[in-house]
Image (tube, rainbow, N blue to C red; front, side, top):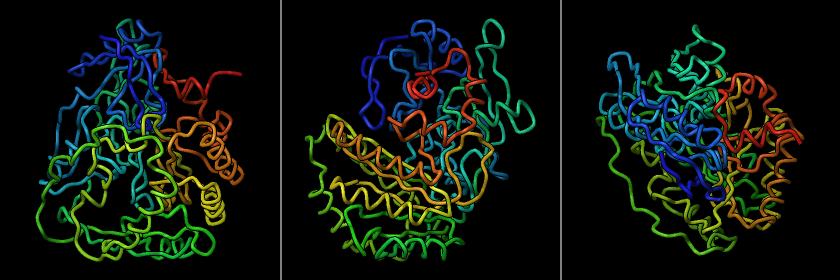
Length: 444
């Protein structure tokens, strides 16, 4: 156990002191949780630190770093059923499963997250309209609880055993206990390549129309130019893909170069982002049809390690909403218009649609409709004011924000968007807490 003064969220706007333990085997996870909770007042499991806000932090308290619990326990290459330690990364899993002809059933936009983090945030991907979120493919997991005897104990959770804890742990932000191992079903693939179509769209209506015509494609997503206005509002590049036959099963190689230092403050502004947007839309790949390896399609940001340092020493805020089907076109239009009018540019703007495939997780983020993800360099109150205006648009249509992304989500908006939050609080392990949950549950 040690003190770490500089644990960072991925957005780098939240950082601070933690008492940290690094268990190396599953049996040490429970004792590590007890020790760090005793030293810090509470504790929290922590993966690879890819939560953008404060949901993965416990400022002033304890953290149990789970990345050392990274063993593959069992992998049935005939059925695709896999069991592994909660601290193993998706990066490591793919290097084993892809050569055997299997892929993750759902993956977020980075492979540098732990299996436990994927469960705790019930991550979604480019195939939500067909596959739902990650929790839908989980069959069982081990959960250490501090209130099961003097030393605590690990229990098994599945849809048929400890079903309430199963549902509340999926998307439960790591608060129901320390998840030690996870079993889930992989997806059989015909090769490690996809057939991809990148199609420029001139505006928001064109995006939604194309998304509706692409529902039979397994993977869909769009990049959006947030500086475009008027008739060009919502212009961008719509990408859709399906697994391609033939070509073998080649896993991705090692990571790319790293961002070595923090970029100067103000590097990402409307001028530089505008120039990038023009080049991005004009590049040959913006009008591409053909085969592509899974790595650049699913994980484009992983090609530059520590890319979050591009936003400078003050970091940035990631903001992601989900809005319902009946209002998604107008709400998305208002959101993009609000951003464009502000003059603040989002460097990474992703728009996609969610399907109506339900998750077993009670606090799962997706809802049938659309989701828009934006990021903004941290310029203090100016940025917070813009995000508050975006919040109001989402609240008015009954949408919600993603806790894994948002480091300043208002308590009232969280409770309205996740009305069963108190069910999680009722079963929260008594020694577990996060900075995010403290903000969401403390009474004014």
